Image (cartoon, rainbow, N blue to C red):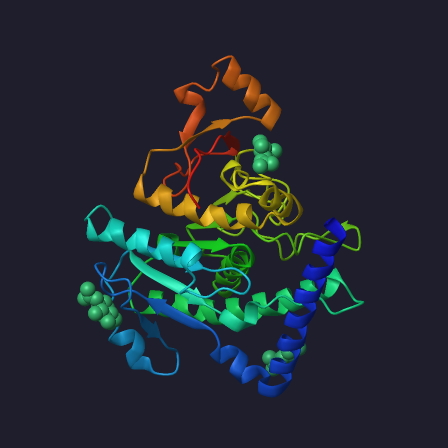
Length: 342
Ligand SMILES: *[C@@H]1O[C@H](CO)[C@@H](O)[C@H](O)[C@H]1NC(C)=O
Ligand SMILES: *[C@@H]1O[C@H](CO)[C@@H](O)[C@H](O)[C@H]1NC(C)=O
Ligand SMILES: *[C@@H]1O[C@H](CO)[C@@H](O)[C@H](O)[C@H]1NC(C)=O
């Protein structure tokens, strides 16, 4: 069972690689850049209305239907995704727009789309280092364009300070958010920093290779004023790299993903796909219900379990999970995420 699943997986990844290589050969770099889009949502009552900001025409920024001097939420999808993908980021976009429509918040909402560039691609026989190289290239390319867009937002007064910017990235998108955070610092001679980066089950691709730990391309707490990371699956990064690291259900498998029967359990245990995606739903819920879910400070899942038993997770040891986590929170936090329908 395990072997055949891995075989099928390898097959899928190989097919993707052929597609990626062919398209790269056919279109070259210009079209790779053209595959990157920066959208905003001018109407909080209708998430289907979206407009694209473009660097090619100066009127695109000048005439944008955006509010000035506002906080910005920029959402970045994962490998193989797009801004229209429902689980994430589209429902998170909708949650931010709901908060805006209700008058509770007044930020501008953006989505960074790099669709086809995010296809995975180990080269057969070459293994993991090549996926890493591919994603380093994609991270560089996508973050370069996104950084120019963010500089355009600042130059046109839609944000007045980089600290007003919050980037939320899932999987590979979490790593791309880190690239953007570092570029904003480089391009401002280390005078400016993004306000916040949230990494949702960030893809574990840049950290360890050749049996060494490399921090260069890894999202960490030096990439923004406040970096919060949520760990939910085996695909996600292991280790604490944020100012705060959250571990729902211990951070490897989500309970809501283990309720659908033995076959789904086995797939979940091998690949962790559902647990990797469900974090988008957690994020959406945390925008809609600001103080509903609390997490408890603990060094490990075992310590958390024993704290629960002895009722040590008191209010002063508990904080809000997700979008509304207080920015001065530091350390590791655990929680049992309530069962949800997926
Ligand atoms: C073009 O793309 C290749 C990889 O596909 C990359 O190595 C190279 O640096 C790119 N060239 C430019 C000018 O961006
Ligand atoms: C929302 O916007 C889309 C795209 O512009 C449009 O087709 C649709 O009719 C709008 N829906 C409503 C309820 O206005
Ligand atoms: C799936 O796994 C969970 C956690 O190990 C277990 O509690 C549950 O009974 C399993 N369900 C099935 C149908 O095997």
